Image 1 (spheres, one colour):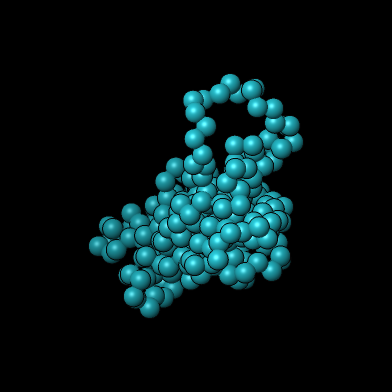
Image 2 (cartoon, rainbow, N blue to C red):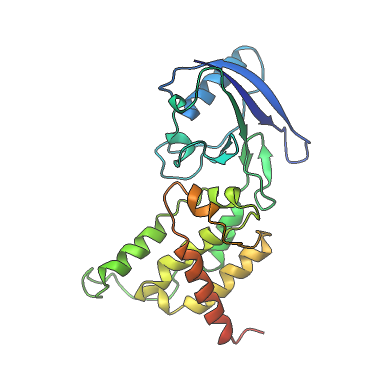
Length: 248
């Protein structure tokens, strides 16, 4: 299958960058990342610099393979880039491949962006620091199944950044909402729920992410189906914390 790739090439963070065209002949059963591997092999044989892109597990788990494909995060279907296959494209099609476009995700090189802003948000409060002693029996703390399921669904976030890439404001509310929700719903996380919400939202704002306008693009493009209910819960947790906050 013959395709034309239009790929964003940028040497470093200070380079202006541009879209460069490549012609490829690929097997439709290849994954999208395997297709890029083939392209890079051909470029190396010609003595040209390969295209830099992020990848790791290639199993749809780690969230590393963040690519903006034909105007959509991860491509034409709702999945991670590594699980996207070339059979979802057509003979002779032009595929435009770009990095995430967000101020808070600066481009490192080509298709690679720095998503460490997410790490700093989690470091600001996305954990439990209360000393709970040794591990307790799993059934000792009764948690209703619907609540356990909801916490698990929030914890499924793989931090790929598709929500930010899909949002017209580059908002991180869905990501932060998922991080806050997975603890706020469970007894173990309630002791620090107020300080967690305040610190994580403050860090999100400091990183320069935009505001949420509730268009739903984030949830529509999330490859693991994180619900917008997490944004509503984030707002409840944050405003509830601020009403009783002792921080000046």
